[in-house]
Image (tube, rainbow, N blue to C red; front, side, top):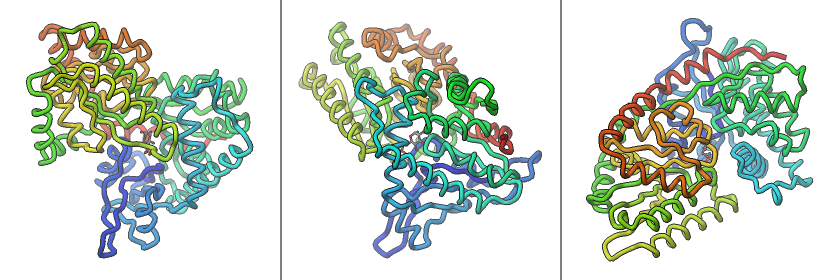
Length: 469
Ligand code: G6P
C-alpha cells in the first residue's frame, strides 16, 4: 500500500552531531495514518497488495531537505519517500495554488469583489502545481508493485491519482479530500482550464469525502465543468474518527499532567469554554471571541464565572492573509480582555504554542467546546473532545463542519455567522440543567466514537479501483 500526502508522517530535526531525529509530523491526517501504516496495515485478504507500506510526502522544512540530502529521511516500519522539491516550484504549488486558491475556494473564504484575480503569474503557479503533482505521481509509480493500492490524500495533490493511473492501469487508486468541496456556483471562479484539469483528473478515480455534502458538491461541480454526459466515477463518503489509544497515551504523559495543573491555576472553580485550532481563517476564531464578548455584555452574571481558553497554533505563516488574521485574532482577544478583566479574572486565556498535550488536557475539562468553523471538511476536535471530556461538557458545533452531519443529535448547533445565535448557544451550554448536559454528552460520546482511523482506512482500501477513462 502506498499513501501519498503532501505533509508526511514525520518531520526531521538536524542534531548538533550531524544526525537527524524523526518527529511525528503535524496534522490530523498524518497522525491518524502513521500508527496504522507503521503497524503494517495491508489492504487485507481480498486484495493482492500485501507488500510493504510506503508513504510519499514532501520535505517541508530546511531540516527535512537536509535529511533527504544526507540520505537520512527514514522512518521506522514505513518506507518513507520524502521529496525535496525545487523551493520556487514548491512555493508556487503550495502557497499560490493549494493554500491561497484551492483552500479559499473550497472553504468559501474569498472576498469575491476583490479576489481572486488570476493574472499571468497564476498560469505559472498552476504549471508548478501540475509539476509537483507529476513528481509525486512518479514517486508513487516507482514504488508501486504490480496491483498495489495507492491512496492519494488532499487538495494539494488532486491530479496525482489520475497521473498514476494513466501509466499504471494495474494499480488500485483512490483520492480522498479532507476539506470541503465547493458547490457548482463557485467552481467557475477558477480559470476554465484549471477547473477542467481538476475535475477531469478527479472524475477518473473514486473520490472520497468526510461527508456526503462535500461528495455531492464535487459531483455537481464536476458535472457543471465536464458536461452532462461526462463519465464521473462515483464519489464515496467515509468519515475519519479519533484515535482513542493515541489520545489516551498523550493524556497519560507528564506533559498532560503539568498542563492540567496549569489549567487548574488559570481556571479554578470557574466554568471553562475551550477551543483548539490551527490559527486558520476557516475556523472563524474572531467571531467566536466576539460572540463571547456579547455573552459577557448581555449576561453580567457570567462575568468572573467563566474562562475561555483558546489554544491556537500558528499555521501557514508565509501567507500574508494568515499573518493578518493572527493579528486580528490577537487584537480581538486583547480588546475583550481589556473590556472585562478584573483584578483576579482574565476572560480569555490565549495560548499560541503548538502543545498537543495541553489541548487534550483542556478537552478533558471543558464545560463548553466551541467549534464554529465557517466551513470545515470534518473537524476531528469535535469528535476528540466528547471522547475524553470528563465534565459532561457540551459541544457547540457549526453546522458548516462536516462532523455536524454525524454528531447533530448530540451537539448544540451553531450558525457560524450569527454572533447573537452563537452567544445564545454558548449560554445555553453553560446553563443547561445537569441532567440535560449528561444525556447529551453520553449521546455525543457514542456518536463521536463510531468511527476510527482503522475503519476509515479500510473504507479507502475497499473503495480503491483501477482508473476509469
Ligand atoms: C488541513 C489539511 C491538511 C494539511 C493541514 C495542515 O488539515 O487538510 O492537508 O496538512 O491542514 O496544513 P499545512 O499547510 O500546515 O500542511
